[in-house]
Image (cartoon, rainbow, N blue to C red; front, side, top):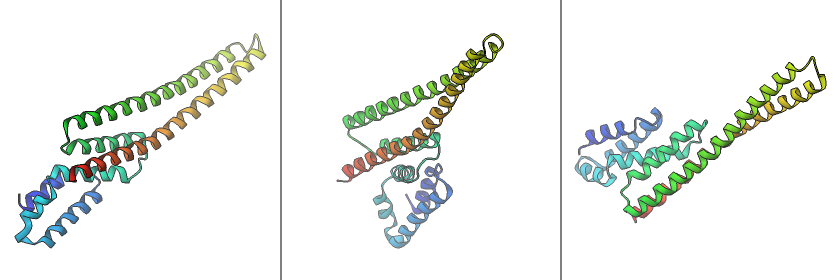
Length: 194
């Protein structure tokens, strides 16, 4: 593979990265090849490894280096790291163990987040119905109205607070989860290089 083909393929594989990150990576490899010179170009390109390995490593490094702003962004960063892990050739049993570990972590994490999210929605819904029920009995029993109205407003408030807390925790934990996967990636890469 010559310089032009290498850089074109690498640029294509890095399209998921932001423009600045992608161009910085391309500039790094161009500078590296400039220093190597035309006579050692092919040897230098072979020493980099495949474009897929380079792109996987760069995507994982980017995913781990920038904290996610939303759970969705964090989820996509976690997937970038997972894909980077599987881009490296591993022993089959180790690959199965890592896949099972990652899958079980995802299932556990998203199960808890889903359960808390459903609970917050249920609190808001029951609070709204309680307020409506309190208003409906206002004429017959004002004290019951106050009880239902107060309980309903409290339930809506707790539901909104729980929903916001779930969103904040999910965002933070996705960043931590991405860093954990990045650490696993670097350990696997270090083992492979050793």
